[in-house]
Structure formats: structure tokens, C-alpha cells
Length: 503
Image 1: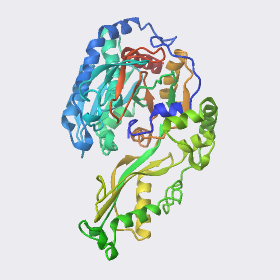
Image 2 (image 1 turned 60 degrees about the vertical axis):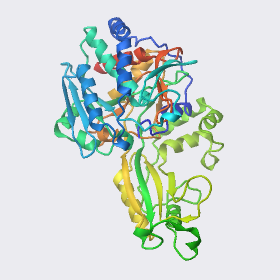
Image 3 (image 1 turned 120 degrees about the horizontal axis):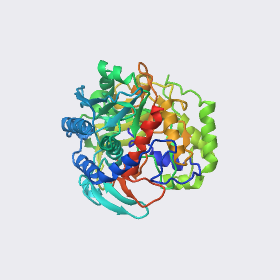
Image 4 (image 1 turned 180 degrees about the vertical axis):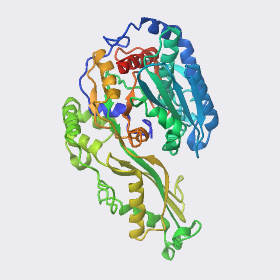
């Protein structure tokens, strides 16, 4: 559910933009120390850093396929050691292992960092170049990009962060902040065991000393727009499974459809159950005793109202391929709904024959893949419990609720040092970024913002890329667009962020 599983930040930015001054890829925060030596080292190490990214892409760790989880964790740990972390260890969980690392620079302040080393699945037939080759490809109007699974989600931004550490060490610069880093290998399946990593006593104790935890990101858009989000919705991913076996009615195997005249259908049972979860138009949740979403705050409503007039309703609809917003709402109200409302969504329906043409069967089993988005104030456990109780109360207790992943929503205040440092770096480059209440998508920031840590959490990082979860995913290496930083500029933005936070 990464920024990957989400409504992309780029689409959110498009749907809620300010007209901003363009960003010079090689400009620096005005009050930062002299970064020329670091910049020189980034240039000198450019090829080596790009090769590190290519090598990392060549090793996919895919949680959904149980592919290379141990190898991915070990590779992640080695990358951290190579970048200067003085303590690195692999943390076992009931699922895929995590990685915990610290870098003690003797600084007064400590910054927390969140990484993921897993990536999404891929079908090589859908790609224009091999998805594990990390080929450099020219993109008109953008520049030279590295194409590969994980290039922007999330290995490119993370490697740019590590390259910043390599460059600072080579330039003889001591980090102005200490670092505490946690990495997981299950982000793409809902961060199922991240709490086991973070709640490990030594990990939790180290994180508790930080100013907050951020995730490296590629925040730039083609026109220079940068959105700083203050949180993200939570998510529950699950399957609802109706079967003749569990129901005690209907067939226990697929049978001829003519028998529907005297045999019950598990597929229809699932459809009828699904209809009880939402209103007739599918837009209002009707699950009994479902957690109530708190009303949007005045501060967050003001952010939405300030942003919406600066962007194009028509262009947003074109981007998403839609003709109407829910209830034909005006654009500003649709955007407010986007950030403030929970959802119950059908990702997919699977049952019986789905190939070409028809096949007259009565399927014995049908599955609905569901995601439920949660806003701050709602809890993952409460949503799951309400759904199960609702189905049982309505007579559908035989329908299996198979929860596959998810977590609570996350929210961070704008006045925290973590967010203010990000804003200061961007403003130092001549940009007034857009503050946005929260991503409509999800990432596991809850593990840092919820008790017992109760830390700020967010994203930061310049650079550009797109295609997360899709074919031809890429991360920008050499920019041909004045509004975008290439790999070296993205790396430099983390150096600026370190110094800003150290203030």
C-alpha cells in the first residue's frame, strides 16, 4: 500500500495544485552550508551510484510471491553498511524479515528513516525493456531514466538517500544528524508484520529518540509542483469468500449451470452480501456499527479550499478518465471528500469461468477482493470487527473474511520539525509547496505516529519517476526538464534536509 498502492502523489498534486515558481535542479537552500564539496562528490560518484541502483533492481524481493525475502533483507543490510551505518542487523518476524540500522554521528538531533526493500510483481511481456535490467532510456521532455521494477517505488529514492551519505563521507563532512533506520519487506502486501520490527525493544528505544520518521520519496512533478502531505489514510485489505462448502448449501464443486434450477449459488450469495455493505449507489458505507469518520478539521478544509481554485477540474477528470465526481459535486467538495471520507471498494470479483466466451457452470466458490480506506480517528481492528459482525447479523456468517493486510491511518501536524524542515528546503529553492491534509492512499506511518512512539512521520525527497506497480516503471537519472532534479539533485536534497533538521 505504498505510495505505490495508492492514489499517486502525482495525481493528487495534479488534482490540487498551486502555480509555483519553477525549480532549478541544481539550486540550494539559501542558508545551507557550502555544499560544493558534496555536490562534487555526487558528480564523481554518479556512475557508481547509478550502478548500485541497477544492481539492486536486479534482485527483486516480492512478498506476494515469497521471492527472495531473506536475500532482500541481507542485501538491504549490506547497502546500509556500505553507506556508513555503524550498526546493522536483520530483525526476524512471523513473516518477512526487517532491517534495523543506526548511524551515530555524535549530533544533538536524530532523524528516523523508513525504507522498504520489497517490490510489486511484474509481467515481463508488458514491459518495453527487461524489468530487472535497469536500462537507461531516453524520455523526451524528461531526460534519461532508469527503467525497472522498483525504480521509483521505492529503490530509486532510497538509493539517492544512500548516495547522499556516500557523498558526505567522501567529502569529509560529518552528518549533522544521527540516523535510525527501519526497513521492511512486506510493504507491498500491507506491512503485515512491521509492528513486530518497530516494537522490538531496542528498535523502539532508538526510534523514540528521533525528531520523527520520514520516507525518501520522488516528490517533483513535470511542472515543478510539490505537495507535502500531512498524513495518509489507513487501509484494510481482505477477501470475502463464499463457498458451497462453508455455506452448507450450493455445490462443493463447479457444476452445470442448468442445475441452478434446484441448487443454490454461492456466487449470488456473495453478490447479495456485498450489496449490504454500501448504499444503493455504492458511495455510502452501511456496515452496522462501522467506525465513524470524524469531520474534517477547519485547518484541513482550508488547505483544500485554498488549493482547489488553482487547479483544473477538467484536467483532473481527464487524468483519471472520469466524467463526473460522486453526486456531481463541485471540484472543491469532491477534493474535500477525497481526503475526509472512508471507502469500501471492490478491487476485483473472481468466481467460476472467466476465460473467453461462455462456459455454463454454477461455480462452487466466489471471491470479492476488498479494500477499505480509513481516515484518522478510525481504527483497523474496529473496521474488521464491524464487518464480521455485520455479515453475521445479516445472516452471512458463513462468508469467510480473510484479512490479508493493512493498518491504521496516520496524521502529522504541520508545525513539527519534520514537516517544517521539508518546507524550508523547498522554500530555499524558490518553491512555495502545497500543504495537503493527507494522501488518499496509504503507507504504514501509523507504526510511528500511533502510541507508544507518537512521532511525526512523512515523506521528503526531490526527483521524479512514475509507473509504480505498472509496466515501464522508471526513476529520473539525468534531467532534461528544468523543473526536475536528476539522481544527483535528488541525493543533494537529502543533504539539505539533514542540515535543515539539524537547526
